[in-house]
Length: 211
Image (cartoon, rainbow, N blue to C red; front, side, top):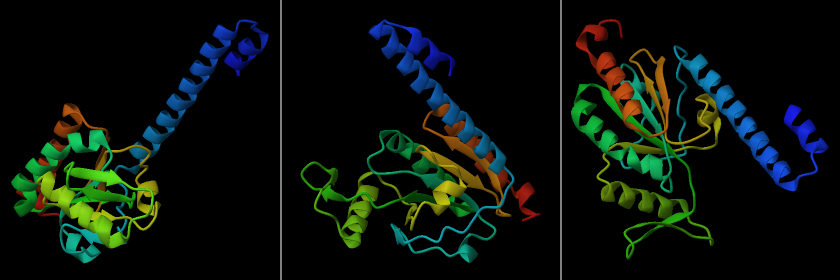
């Protein structure tokens, strides 16, 4: 309101444009703060059932299949560069911890992508893609990036909204009792260290007695 008042009094068009930029930035910060508050409030709360529309790169998982497991939910998309930057960590964690009780699930959506054999990557198309075609693309994408964890295609935004997803990648780690223990947004070494530390803590046999 203060900046808008200054803009109204200002006769300088350059200053007006700068003020518009500051107003936009302030609104963005406000949204990020509110998102951070929501994410923080989720820690310790119950996870919800995934209720996926389809599963790719592995058999479908029911809620009973995740009981007593440490679950890592990775919200991502094939077009998301920062998501792809996290793949080395996902591959490493799958290799190190899958047989110790960790289940990694990549949650995504239909985005009208097909696999481009010549380019060796997914390509968005405008004429629509059948679900089976997009499933095939995801399988090739997983093979290309050597990803062995399952992908769950969301029915709608219910799960994303519950976990406060406003940007991707976002990781949610759930303990053996089905409680949310950590949420991290974005790629980067610190986030990866925080997530792996939590995985190790939750998989520690000393913590398994109370599951």
